[in-house]
Structure formats: structure tokens, C-alpha cells
Image 1: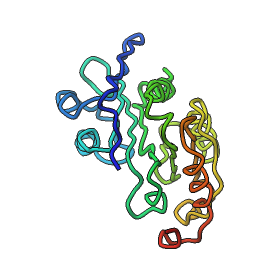
Image 2: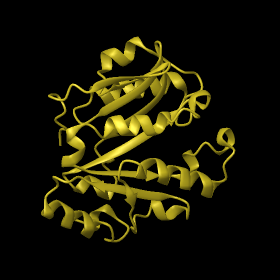
Image 3: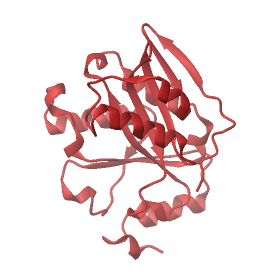
Image 4: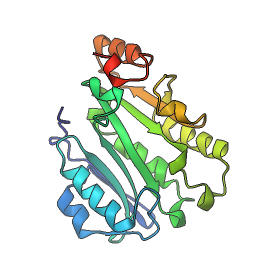
Length: 210
């Protein structure tokens, strides 16, 4: 499935010393530097390359917050992982990752990134999901415990309309703090909504859903 966002030019929103941009092209990301404290998921240079690769893919969408030429926050969207049950749905877009530099976390960077991303018309045509695994959470730098962090993420994603979704997805059930959230766009068909509802509880294997 290809996400057709080629006709959507996105926007650029200055906020004090930060600029929020997207969807950004891979060539543009390549010209920027990555803040060295963006390392929750992988080393900064590897995450930088991951953003380039996602933006270059047919289904990938990347939004960034930058200070001058340094990326200090980002959020990515792409098709669900091929080994997850959600890849069986043709109209699901997954929020893959969001990360903000610890130095900028008091500036509502995450909410501003989400707000900008959901101005993209494609979001109203998709079921957008996010699956949050607690082992990726930056408890050390935030000073939050696991439940406070979960609440923070729920508030962040809830700011653009995502709500918590019950499911028997075995990856989510691995830890009680893991959470799945979703937003059904207003232009999603009843058939796609029905299929999504059926997929929430279909047993542990992705092969249980045809």
C-alpha cells in the first residue's frame, strides 16, 4: 500500500526558536544534523538514517522540529510491520516513533509535531494506530514512573484524537503498561472500520486473520 501524500506540500511553522516541518523529503533530512541526545530507539546517526529511509519509502511520512539545522524532534508514520496482524488491513497507517530532545521537552514539541502531522489530509482517510512498548520509554530523563509516562503518552496522542484500544495482540500483552491507541479518520469507510474492529481480537497469530 502506498500513502499518497505527494500532492500535500505540508507546512512550516516557526515557534520561538524552533521550526516544525513536514512531510519532509529524504534529501532535506540528509542535509540536517541530528541532536546527539536523540537516542531512545538507536544511536543518533542511525536514527538520522532511519528518518531518511522512512521519508524515502513509498508509505513513509516524517515530520521534524528543528533548531537551525539540528533536528530536535520527529514523528514518523508508515505501514504496519509485516509481522504484525495490523499489516493485514489495507487502510492502517502506524505512528512508528516520536522522540523529542530532553533539552526541548518543556516546549510542547511533541504536541506541536502531532498537531502539524494531523493537518495532513491523508490522516482523515486512514486508521492511524500507535503501539507503545514501555521498554522504549525514557523514564530516566523524564523522571516519570512507568504509569506516569503511559499517561503522558495517552495525553499526547489524545490531543489529536487517538483513543486507547483494547486488543489481544500478543506484543501488547507482553507487559501490562504497553498500550495501543487509534484514530479512525472521518473519511474511513464503514467496511474498513468493521474490519479493524474484527482484528482487535483474533487470537495471537497474524495468520488467524485472513
